Length: 217
Image (cartoon, rainbow, N blue to C red):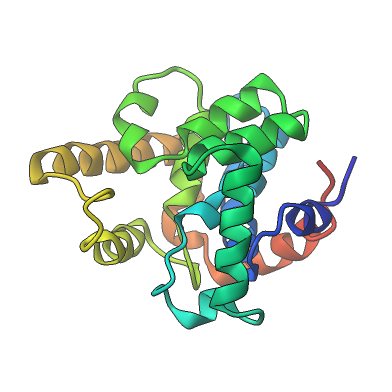
């Protein structure tokens, strides 16, 4: 077992990536603690904690300067090149899965990681397992700066990728995925008793994130 912060250090995650993954795991943790069906909480938390561990590959040099603090953009661009060469991929999702396999993650964790993708939400909600659905949803509640509503997160992503042809979607495809996101949220919280989406905030997540900093995977 290795502490998650040591894992982040080994795989050279930027501070902003570390914080994002901790926030996503904290969102999922709160859902798991209220969920009224049997689910594998550890698999969900493990997946959320490493789902973007390969995301240095999607960083571009003109991203906000604070994303590269304190080492700076040149340092992290060199890390990006090194990781791409070491793992023989330029795809961040593929790298995250390769690292998860290297860490000995279970098949369920790998499935959850693979499901955390805006483009896969339509497929994910058609499946009976809730573990991948909770992971996919939790990622839509954390932007680079904190815990937000799903509406805010989707708008932030829309702005961030509007000038990225490799990430942009047609209006009809995007509309189908957005519908699936809202279906997923409704169906998850139908099993969460009194917990509502707006109950999950930076304040409720803070003590969980503090625990997660010493979490072992």
